[in-house]
Length: 317
Image 1 (tube, rainbow, N blue to C red):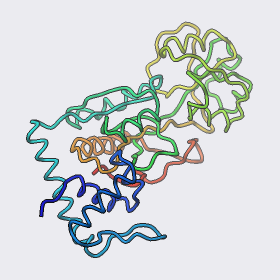
Image 2: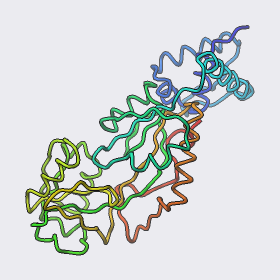
Image 3: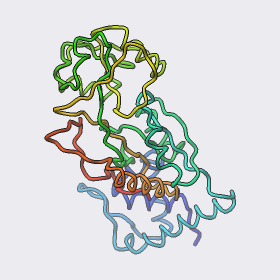
């Protein structure tokens, strides 16, 4: 009896997810195609591998026995391909959030993850599409719900955010500001606010009534626009190196301090060994540098942090 690896892989992903739609998403195929692969495998084996019912999907006893060797079959097939191709290919990682410079954080852990092939995603939706299609292995930036089925993420860093404003702004001389003190100012955004989740939620939470979009032509150009108008302000992570822009001041935000959340995002079931290495390096650096400190009495997050990973798969596989 010769097994089809694509069918076995479909079974393993479905056993991991216990949901046909999510499993299909991790393989970037339709749910109908996934169901056909599993049905053909069950026909070949002459037995059902899943119980399908109104309450969802669960493994049969045969399915439970079949799962461990099925995982080994998929791993062996992947190893065979890697051996034929040659050395382990680089881990393909996209970053997004250009004005907030995600490479500052990723650069501190990249050397411990093996060889990386880095790209730049335009925004979270474009990155999730690339992950689901298998064009990249992982991504790094700010994750916010809802995420498509088949993706998981791990919180890596919570970074304090400062206000940047013109030296002619009425509050420019203050040593620190509360976010609600900015409610009569204009929040200057590097694009349409409905596509910038963090700034959108900040404006809602602190009753910032006036907002205006710019065009993302880079950090220096954006900050020059902020400095040019006394009522404008924007938000930048506190340790982003700011370009020399005349007439600009950075002021810490307190009571509460907004935190910008950086996460590692991946497709569940991705077996690239570099993914585990990168996740481990992020966790080690977060512990060493105290990246995940959060006090709800002192800090503000659009989504309070939950467990260190979320999604259908809690760890890269």
